[in-house]
Length: 79
Image (cartoon, rainbow, N blue to C red):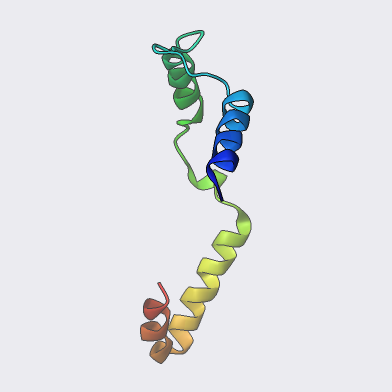
């Protein structure tokens, strides 16, 4: 790669990338929108929101541990 190629690459990059302003600021304040988004997603989980298959898996693990107590260390290892 020679100096001519480097100059050409610099010119192409300068034309293709937008120039960054010294004090670039957002068009509007984003903090109120972020607070609204956090308030909307902060729903307290309850037992009714847990899907039924999670309860089925939990019951299956409890049954497995009850009938095969030697499987408890194996299950704990994979947690």
